Amino acid sequence: METSQLTSFLSLLVALSVASERLVEITKGFIPGLDRPHPDPRRESIRKAFLQILAVFAGILTVFLANPLIPREIHQASGLLEIIGLGLLVSGGSGFWNS
Picture: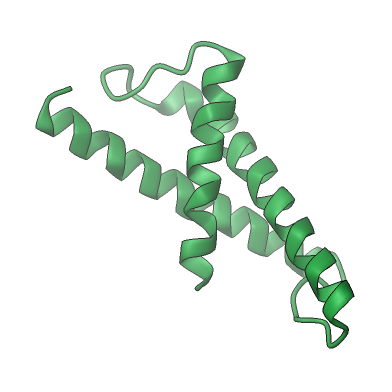
């Protein structure tokens, strides 16, 4: 992979990660209790686990929806496994934007 392609791919990951995080934030606003920490440690751990699962689904959905718009020179997610893999990469950056 050439340097310009690598730069474009990393830029794509960052953009998709930000879009995925926005989707998580919007969803958190619709579900009561997800938008703020819970005082009970057990319920807080459940909330955090749910947010991680939500971030994974949001990442996969974001990649699936954006896939037709991604230039083929940067990435070609032609199969479901590739979309899921890229979605997992995107969701990994989701927590970074919140920290």
